[in-house]
Length: 117
Length: 117
Image (cartoon, rainbow over all chains, first blue to last red; front, top):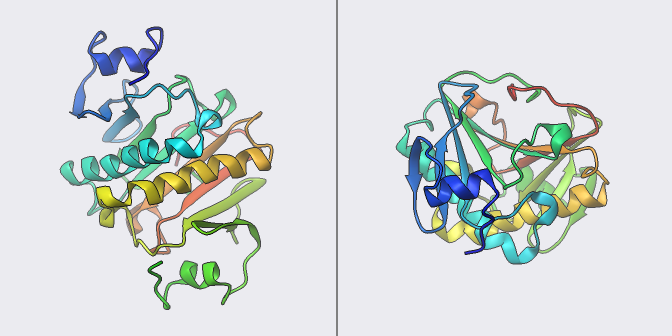
């Protein structure tokens, strides 16, 4: 699995940097956001280092699709599905992406307004 | 491809109902949101009828991963990547899901606040 030793999320995935992990397996790691925006706010990342959506190719479909299916599984584990939840990907600094390793925000436990920011 | 003839997005995908399509191929269809929340606001859906993230299984990883890789490609086609964009999935009525066929919102062309709704 390709990782980047200067990437914060690769270092969390490897265990080199501590985070409050809520789930991990061979493909993905999920941990609590350090600046939560909802009662439940978890980030899920692929172990593979992909900086942003701009770097995605069709060959990555299985990798990022697995992130999404595991995100849904984590939401079920956290009992978010009954009240609904929101998944968000920020792409690029202007949209709020601060770590350049693809990650989905899983937000739940409260109502969400529209537009989404 | 499994579709549902009572589902609005399946009917748009098949062409039975008109929408302002911006992209389509054998796997996905993308079209303008009728109530846009940003200068660019496109919905992208798999042709396969999957009602919500609650219905996803690991076997769907390739399907939903393809939606994500095509969303990124559409964003590049629309030149959204330079100023950033946001992808959002609302899951469940409480989170704002109004059509029960999985869809990603692609929002771009303006700045986005945080939290995302």
